[in-house]
Image (cartoon, rainbow, N blue to C red; front, side):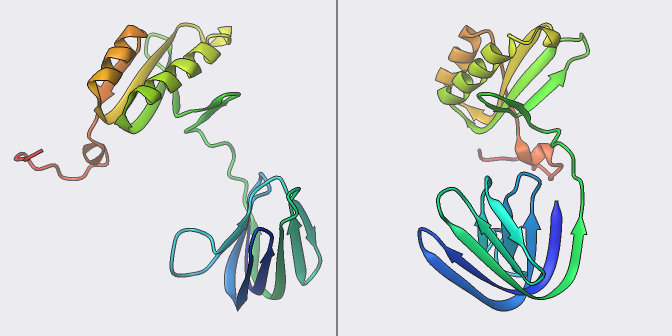
Length: 189
């Protein structure tokens, strides 16, 4: 990931048009080619961004990012305050498959592989999603014995029944308790 802190102006031309006036901003260029421009305050979301795939053309004082849809992000650099590059490596939390990322792919003490799907609310579609992942993963013989666990703060009865029918385990967990937040003994709900 490349992180550039610079005084810059930013223009976006595409579905709409927007202009960010000259200010000090953080420009993030991720390994996948995504470019995001952040301000120091306000929100956690970028002010402007361009998702990959895109083409980045750089000169000393101007970057032009374009994508196949014809959108353009033009960054005029007035002063570069910092320009650093960091290799973050793969995210160990998600295991990509051709049909989407498995939330957690773990090895149990008995040597079996456990695919875990985590949701806030456990509904039938989450169970179906985990079942699809398992069906796909079973084609990989290197994973050995494969089990699935559906995890959520609350799981609807229909989802529990479907999970059990599909041979999947399920578990309700309290996210606040997992984060180490104090849980009062007396609870109304």
